[in-house]
Length: 246
Image (cartoon, rainbow, N blue to C red; front, side, top):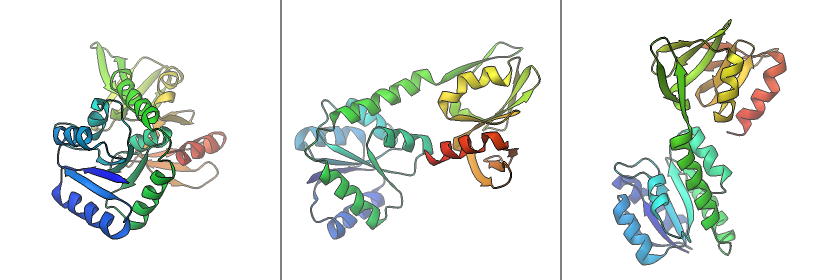
């Protein structure tokens, strides 16, 4: 298989190239690119079977690069330390990823998986993934009615929500809190499709910010801001099932 690797950090390109040479002899590396424009040119010129793609890069992210590829005919293996929900999206669309720092065994497995599917055209999965990302850019904005007007947020900015009778407190990742005159049930209807889970009658949490789950009758979770939140017994299995899918 022919391949191109894309990473803005030189040492990451060098390490991955070395690992491929040592542990994946079936890969012929055609180019190692440091940015989006050079990558697009290399992809157009070489038409590789496989693309090793970093996600977080200045100027043009790996996601942006994919959205600009015309009629992609290559497999994609992301090399990333990106957030869990990006990884969930990658899994959903049958793409592969390796977490940094790259492990040689995971690399071999990812390459073997790519080789097994080489005869299946990958364009549909890449197109579906790009469509998902484009929807997230526009469809993830949430307008909260406050006393001053509307506060526009994305779901990634919300750590958890807490009920206060007919009101709901939004606790944000920047440490701020917003109170709106909506019930937690109304908030849940908006956020449940965006990775949130009602773990208790009084709490709706953003699962991506769960740091730890502590077993118990229902148990409790510790969020990224060190807030301890109870998990009710009747919500426990639903919550654990959601964690397993991340």
